[in-house]
Structures are given as structure tokens and as C-alpha cells.
Length: 295
Image (tube, rainbow, N blue to C red):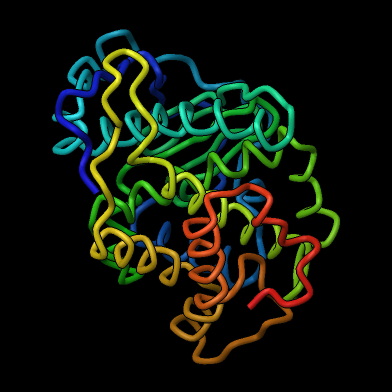
């Protein structure tokens, strides 16, 4: 999916982080990829790979994302794509959340970092992967993860595969706004656990965003943020969803599948719930907590 080139985006939507500072729980390099796999296999939550006591990340300077001013920039620069996707998500949820829940949408923070950053949940390194911290209500992305997702996990490198990841993390912010995010910690493992239901709901919310992304306009220009989705776009998103399924990662890492340690759901489930959100375009269709059959 490509952004319409004339869309205007605000480089100040994101703050930057990176470098050292504080305690880093896990080293970098290939060990980072291994730790990311182990986190998904064993049910470790991203917060468990964070150092303690960190403060929220500080902006990296007004010029850090100065190139990110248009849809054209978002089509060629991954940092700009993250920012533009966030602004599209802001516009979609600012409309949908009040319509379906009566609750006003509050924008989450957005930080793009390199190697490590301080957060309200502690100090995080790149191997955590993208995550949402409810303490400071901020979504964190090291954009190098998208290459890992493609090279190591076999996901498509297409734009919607990357945008799906951003939309998934914003889905956790929606859950936090609705008081649902804590259910993942109350029941953290298993094929029908609260953690799996939380992650599948975030996949569904990513699909809801995709359903509206090509019709929701940029407030500044009135032009839709995104061009209409193609079948290839949907295939790219489904590829990313499948790549991070618990069953697929377990099979690749240890040669067997153990649903009792699942925290995110199977590849098939993740694809199913993204499609559910995309086809319905409704937050109400994403109630995984009431679903008897997760797919």
C-alpha cells in the first residue's frame, strides 16, 4: 500500500531515541534475534526484556525526522512510513473510537529509536522488537526490526507488512484506553489465554485500520492518506501476521509446537483476526475475549 504523495505529515509526531543510557537487559547482534524468538517461544513478555527504572524517551531533536513531511517521503523512507502510518491511525481512530464506544481517542506517544531507548517501562534494546508501553502510553519502534521480520521470519517486505506492525501496536493503545490491556498479564500463557486474546484483538484492530485507511483523509489536505489496497497489500499484511505466529516460530526454533506456552496465537489465528477486522471495519467485531472459537 502506498501513501498518496500529496498527503502532508508532521515530522514532530515522533520523538527519537537511541544509543546507551541505563541498563540494557539483552545484548545486540545475532543474540538479539535469538532473544526475540525465545521471547515469543517461551511466553516472555516484552516488558521482561526491559531494564528497570528508565525514564520516558526524550525527543531526539527537531531535525531528526525533518525529511518526513509528505506521503512521497513515506513511500521511500521507513521512519517516515512509521510516522505517516501513525498519523493515519490517529485519523481513523479519532473517528471510530467515539462512534463505537463513546470514548474520545487520545493519541499515543510515538518513539523511533536505534539500538536502545529509555521508556516508562524501563530501558529497552532492539531485540525486544516493536512494543507498546502502557506506563507512558507510547509505541516504540526500531525500524531495523522490519528487515529482521523479512530476513529471519520470512515476512514480506511490502509496505503494508510494515504498516500492520505499527497498527498492531496502536491496537494495544486502544485496548489500554478501553481498560482491556491488563487481561494479558492476568492470564499470560496458553492457546486460549488472555495474552493470546489480547494479541489477536490487536491484530483485528490493525485490520479495522486497514479497512478505513484508504478512505480516511489527511485533515490538512483532505486527501486520503493511502491509496486503495490491492490484493498484494493484503497478502503482505497476512505474511507479516503469519510470520510471528507462535506455532511457526516454535517449529522453526525447536522443531515442535507447544500451545500451552503460546502468548500471541498461531499464524492462522493471527491472519484470521486481521481479516475479520479488515472485512468488517468494526471495533465491535474484534471482541476476542468473548469469542468461543479463536480460529
